[in-house]
Image (cartoon, rainbow, N blue to C red):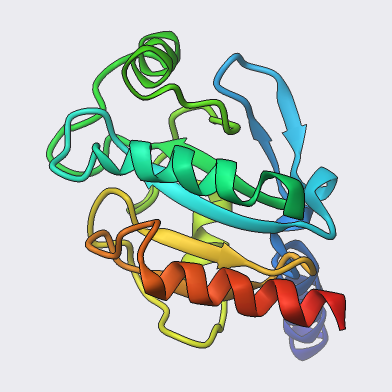
Length: 185
C-alpha cells in the first residue's frame, strides 16, 4: 500500500509539473495596473521577457527595449517587462511608481507587469519555468536585472541573454530574425 501511495503521488506530481511548465502560455500574471493576464494571448508571437529595475546600471536598456518593440511592432514580436527588486534593492517603488517612471523617462509602451520575485524561495512560477526550461543557450538562476528570455511562437524558451547583452545588439536581433524566418516556413 505504501508503494502504491508513493507511486501515485510521484505520478500526479510529475504530471502536474509537466503540464504547468509546458510553455509560458500556461501562466497567468498580473499587469502593472493589477489586471489578470493570461500569457496564452501571446500564442503565435515571439516574446522577449525581461526582468527590469528602475535604479540599475542597466536601466537605460529600457530605451533599447522601446526601440526593439518599435522595430518589430508589425511582426508579432512583443517585449514583456517584469520589474523585480531582487538585486540590490534597485526596484523599490510601487507598481504605479514604476509605470510612471518607465512612461515618463523612457516612453515604455510595451506590456509591463506587476513586480515579481525572479529568484529565491518566493520566485514567481513563471521565472521558475524560465530559469529551468531547456533552451539553446543556458539555464540557471538569474544573476542580475535585465536578463532576457527569448520565447518562440510556441511559448517555449529558445535562448537566454545576460544583462550585458544589449537588446538592440546583434545577438538578440539575429536570434529574433531567425525565429521570424522559422515561424514563416
